Length: 405
Image (cartoon, rainbow, N blue to C red; front, side, top):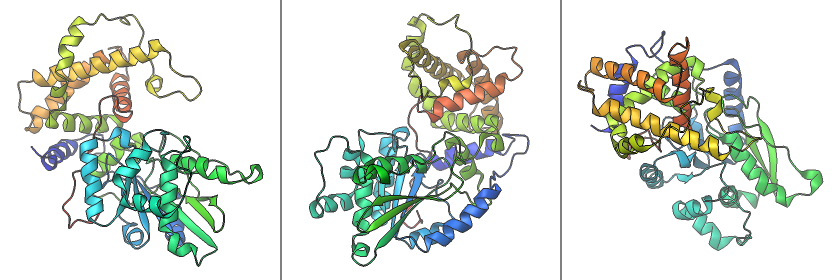
């Protein structure tokens, strides 16, 4: 079954009540309406747009209401979180954008290591820039965002000769990594300024909606180039349930709006229909041989799985999470491989998912008597998916060439 069939089956199950309200998913708080108006206004003045999308949903994470304006500007599409996306599928997306004459760069806004290779591999524009403009290529501290910054300058090259001040706008839906990218650019650009001219960093958070105001940061002299960080904005109404569920799964819509239970049911449906747990077959034998080192360790809050900013995890914590992931993958493999029903049948899929919630509760070491056990299962499982512990995925199918990216 292809991805369209997978999504169709997932949406069918979703329509059967992924949360108490069901139906379409919409999240458009007041600040988004104001931000959308401000973005439209400033787009008219911008010389270049960096549109940040989630590499796991390259199409669904595009704000369709802004596409007419964005496509009319000089634009670079940055597919962020490439470390969480399936490389083979992501490469197909890059080739698709290239065939559509749209500059596109897969990036990891938080990484300082592997991006130079990605930019050289995927960007013909960057290769051209290397031959035309000199830069300190031997400097080991330059990261992926320098290549993006260089690409920005190359795209603006023809404008630089006639404009004293240039504006680069960074746009995207919530939680795709705009502010993280701004901070990476900030780290590179700050080497060009004196201490008195250092710029403040953009605020970065794990939840959508952290940035609520448009802020500007100077990144170059002669001419002066400013980059504008904008709030993440969605469309007022997301009519397509499939798109709404993907955005929620990627974290671009607040979990409380959709319901963690509904999001996990959608995720499990996609995993089961793709047969992903069956690829974890090798874990079955491993789990039989592994001694439960942490069997007596009590359950913990889902926040424990989130990376700590001030305290690095010790070896024991890392081993615990690794064993936890093994148990989760093993539980899903066994539940799917031993399921006697038909997953292409709605009732069959519902029965399988209900059983998987039970085995996940045990694998995640959540007390059976907990009144919020299902919510805790959902939160922990989502954390494992969103941090890439369950593997890399691209949920969007590569569209036909006649489809607008």
